[in-house]
Image (cartoon, rainbow, N blue to C red):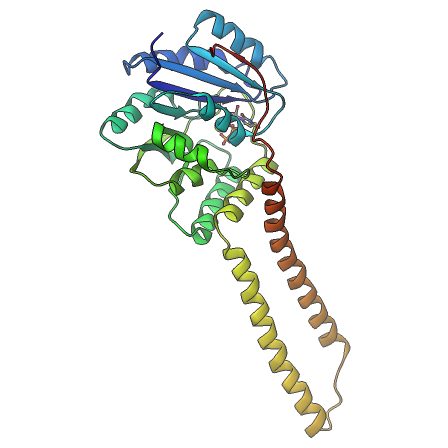
Length: 310
Ligand code: UDP
Ligand code: MG
């Protein structure tokens, strides 16, 4: 079999009901491109029958290959596993839940042929609950403020990556992987293609709110040390205020007969300072925790089996 020129990497976590529909829609989209292709599905420790469904699909169509991970490692690690196994010249990251339309892939490939090494989809509309939308918007805004370099707004993992970009990404050793951020960090010529984000097909979000918050924290703390600088600024501000207040208290003590009232001001000072100190410690802790995780050098994922790779 000839080396596939196009690979689609699909992280799968509890998607047994959506997979047949993915199979039905992805194949024609890829046939339309006219390049030899492979689809690499990574079963990220699903607890439902996803792996069985993937096995059946592989039996029907050898272009669909399977990597199963030994447990749930999360979306970014699953994608990393796929990127490590794909040998193609261009690699598309596609979610299994059909929120990103496979029909857009020919368009991504067209842009790639025009010479762009990264072609990412960006969402013009989201079909999400209002609450999630609000959170997501807040996240992008915060990230925009904190990041040291521009990150494309409203774009997720859905993208086509040139071989060179994949090699660059694979050289980044960090464990806390915010793929979208790393993708813009590596540079190269990048272009966005607009699309409308669809509703999740037949499944509940695998990215639960805690996972999304984790992702947001990863995005902010791994891409910026501005939170540390804000902590410093808080400290400087508090020190200046304390100094001013201190002078005032000294003045009243030495040069006036006013009795110095105690409880309220003392409590206020203690509580404010304690709050600020704890918050600053928390910020520092976020970074230390990340350093700790990085120096352990654990692998990003553990493969328990593969299907279709020789
Ligand atoms: N996913 C995964 N591991 C996880 C959570 C999700 O591989 O721990 C997969 C999931 O099957 C889907 C993709 O990652 O194909 C995106 O997940 P989801 O739709 O829950 O995320 P969102 O669309 O909210 O970003
Ligand atoms: Mg989704």
